[in-house]
Length: 259
Image (cartoon, rainbow, N blue to C red; front, side, top):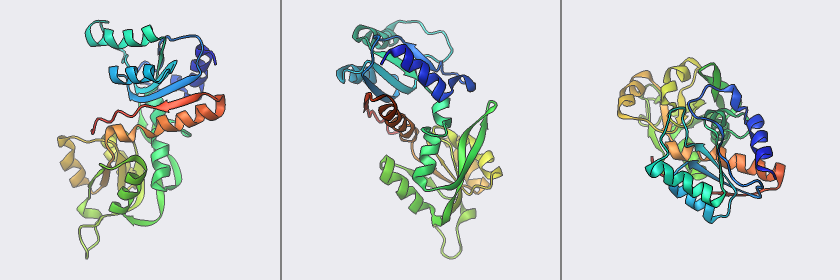
């Protein structure tokens, strides 16, 4: 398939023009004219580029691209990254917020499906668009059980912050999830939006020290999947879509950060 045709098709399918995003979404580095094999990775880094070249991919699709609307000198490590792609004739396509928000192959809809949510609806306003999802479990579930369900599908390493306000008494120490909001990456910033949507549990990626007490005080259970792990699922779904739609070979490059 022609690279420019594939990139244009992805632009439309992922609706990249719809979202206000620091990422320069779309084709960031031109590659060879023909694409038969597409690699996927969360991050645009030298390691993912070297792996894509070793896999003989003509295009690498990433969630976190090289260009973020700021001027960057093409020197040092940045030069080494771009040189690796250009010398191998491997293109780079980045899709950030549009992949979080996509209703078919996005990170957030995939996490919602993995959690087993029903009555899923868009949620989470971000710069004039909606990027997350919220839904209900068929019946109340211990948050630890929901955590284990997600771990079984995206890997171990998730952690919980159980709110004392959602724990039954007795027994204590076991929060329950009923209505669940989902926003990958650093979605803990959507804490108040989740509460406003009636959620008792939020599934997201990472947190920071400054968010521990706001979560504790607002009465919301939070499952932190890890930023990296929470944003592998949309890329894998997009890979399956590309295989089905275009008959292209795909490979996922797994370079976990543990964060």
